[in-house]
Image (tube, rainbow, N blue to C red; front, side, top):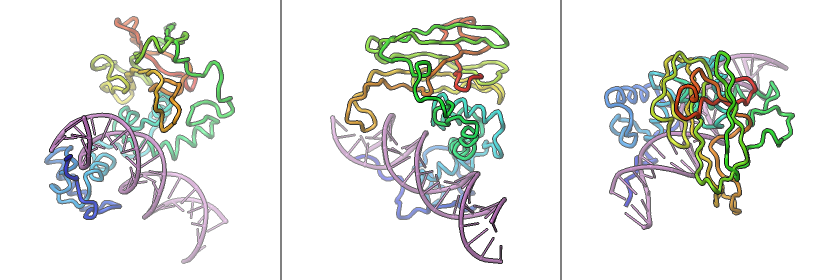
Length: 276
DNA sequence: AAGCTCACCAACCGCGGTGAT
DNA sequence: AATCACCGCGGTTGGTGAGCT
């Protein structure tokens, strides 16, 4: 029945890692590679559970980790991605080479939150703190209606498109997927994406040409109203949606899907701070 | 110097999804 | 099909050092 336990908790160390443990873990992974965390501790001669080994490696020992302070550019990326996808630290980390989700999470909680609060911005909503909680312009589109994106484009140094939503009828479009393509948050030397835009409900990390290349490929799935919502006894009347921070969607890229061919989808950014 | 507060961050905990048995 | 461990993630905690009184 099921698998055998990965480790006996009674015989595992906890707390801070020693230099010796680090060395064992690093040398084991160097010769055997990552993965198989279940069997790793025993094989590496560590009295740790696999979960702990994985965490130690990913957050601290990995050779490609970038140490040191976050740059202003990284700050911006974190803020913008957070306003798009919320506390999806692993996804945000995927856009910042050398940074871990844990590091970004800590940095958010200790630095950026305060920074935003000082600016009078609610870090949870990315809106001015004084702003009333609901307004007609910043509410999510009504998801009971079909979403009909209207895209207008302007061409400056980058192409910008604003998408607005006409009243949608979700019941006619169960599992509606909005493809929003690539989000450019910085300047790319050359856009380079793999595949067709990534998995549903997940951000796909495009290949980096350079660290400033901050393209982001998204698909959104809007699901019909759920009948079990986070322990709520009442059926939820709201559809679930991946993105938070609704408002105005702004497309911007050098090769917007419309002039680059294919479905637009385009290159979509989010005007959460009013200056993308 | 001692005590206190605060900031930082490594590590732990618990949960949900997935897959092995 | 059912069970349960593994994996990965996000939230939280606790240890440590710096700065202040």
